[in-house]
Image (cartoon, one colour):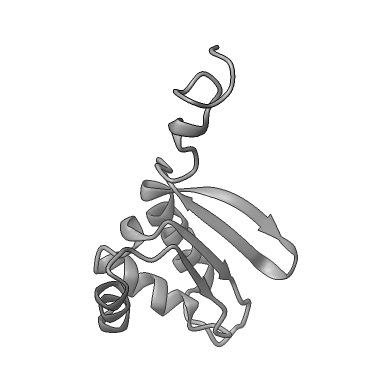
Length: 110
């Protein structure tokens, strides 16, 4: 988590997207991110879940991690090759009300 803290400090803002594809170590990384409070700070996470008998308690850990993710994010997509996307919930950056119809200076009133 020290690397993420350095990125946030250097950029002066939170992380927009974190993509994890590390051939099995995603379980340990996500467990660490969860225990350190980073999951709630991410705006979007995509992860590739790997299936290997060499990952101890893989299914149990994935279920636990999905529960942790669901507490602070919402599923966004599931794709081929075990990719999943998770979006922050709520997503304050998804819609800027200044650009909705009826907003001052934009389109006709609702």
